[in-house]
Length: 156
Image 1 (tube, rainbow, N blue to C red):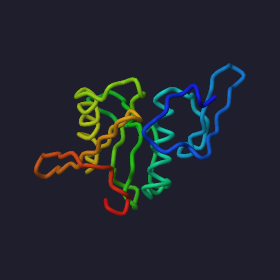
Image 2: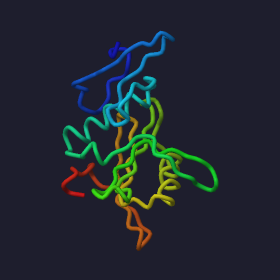
Image 3: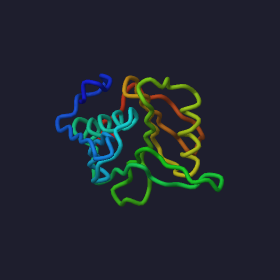
């Protein structure tokens, strides 16, 4: 099954749990949500990326949430993944995923910047599974800079 999905620039999933429902829809288990979700190309990226964050970079899964709701200009939106502070009160990082065939453009950065107008996280990450970008945001000075790599959790 997984061989039909694109190879990503991320470590392979060690515990790949995919099932096909009675409706014929393939689903992948999302450990952060604790349930099977439709296996879309974007979900394929999210699964690999969150596994990389928790398994390799030391991000605590207990501080991460997928599909976090927010309201922007009276419109309901959802952030793909949010990393919270240890107290769980404040967003520390927002992560936006795109399918591997979607190019990372200014439009994608504009989308995550709009989300950050509400959440005010100090780190923004964008990935299509092939290319990954991490920005450090200084809300006091109103500036952002690209980091060369996604930092391990202990360096945040």
